Image 1: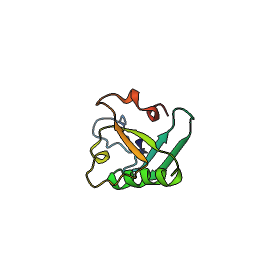
Image 2 (image 1 turned 120 degrees about the vertical axis):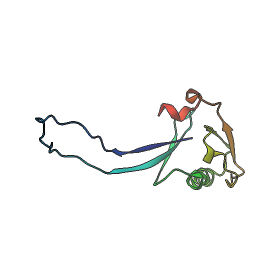
Image 3 (image 1 turned 180 degrees about the horizontal axis):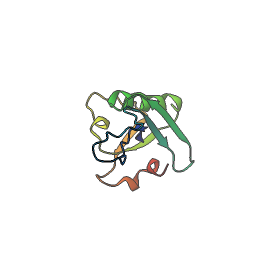
Image 4 (image 1 turned 120 degrees about the horizontal axis):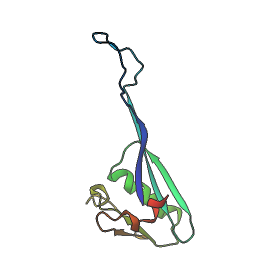
Length: 115
């Protein structure tokens, strides 16, 4: 499992003018984004994604519960990085979900990073 931030980030460039002339040009001063949570099964290629407005332990818990409820017959091993909100003490993990935390600075061991 992993999450990614997708969005629009304003880029301010430069405009050449003569000395003493204020440059006039179009610019966009806003920033919008959303987060995409994703799970992938490396054996079958099955993927599950969820869009969320922010990235915190509440959305991680909701995403994991959605997986647990949609496939309640199976036990799932979920590989996570060591982000603080993945290890929050208030997280309630369903019984059919096992969490495995990957070593620091090793995204190559998480299958969803390739997607």
